[in-house]
Length: 129
Image (cartoon, rainbow, N blue to C red; front, side):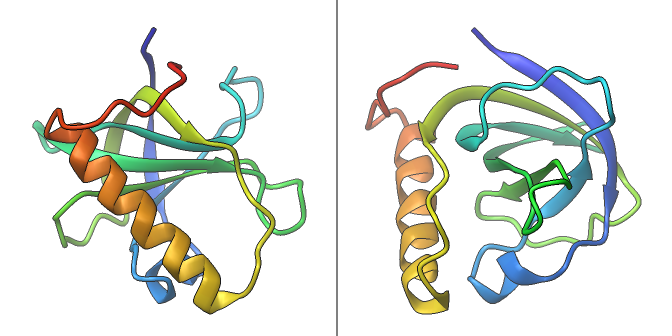
């Protein structure tokens, strides 16, 4: 099963960038049905081009700010203000409590490597969306 969402990219807090994984932040509108919170591999479309993506759906630091953070694998570009379509393909893992910046950086880098492998068809990640 594949789920698709779209929205405008809005500025974030910069946390993902500090962890080595810059993301496009898409606010999830109230009333939109989403899958479970977690980290997914998928695809994002910007300006008519598609990119393999690592996607984190979380509820922010306060637990009240539902958002989707999209990292375009192997890409660096300014996305604020652009419209983005996002397709979730497969769940990689559940969210984990924040263990500290160094540990989280390691976890995020492992996620990026797994997503890159998956995009190249070398690895199955387990549960499907």
